[in-house]
Length: 232
Image (tube, rainbow, N blue to C red; front, top):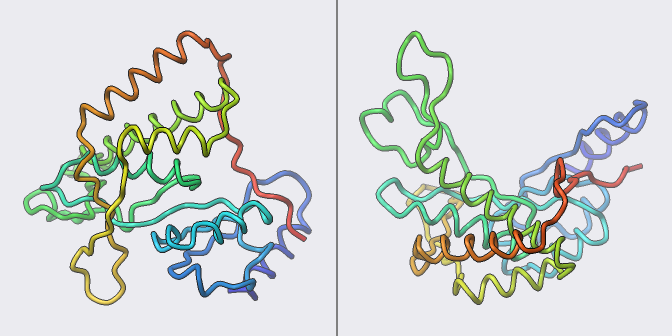
């Protein structure tokens, strides 16, 4: 991975302009990474083991400017979709820049038999060419918008992100519990938030919305510029 990362940056650095391209790697075990990818890894897709080694991962981010994305599995269809909202807020409050569900596309059979990976369904009719979003995918959208609210609140008040995140975690009593998915071999796992009720998340976003209405922050095209430092 280090060889390919070095080759990637060697090629990118020779191209003029400001193209936004990054070297991505999926890191299942951040505790074994050591310094092999320091200054080379831009887009760090790391599993939820990073929570046990959070200080180490965030220190690398602070020094080398990499983007942290937490991966894991989506909730089963029969369980509460509040999981998606809780995961978004939880990851943000801990310092991650985003989340990505491990596998997201269902097969054609998912229209008749539930598949946990089917956040996106294939076209249902022959005449259609576009994938169909699931209700669970829309729950992730809700979580993303809640994180945008929290980011805007942090910027408008000048309060550090870690402080806002800590208050939100305490307010929602947000504690992600890692569970297995039953997958054989390497299991991405799923974080459950059984104590997070929809009405709690709703009350929080209403409260933040009222605060932002009073603060009247200026409109922005984007809240965060996820651009990594130029690598040599």
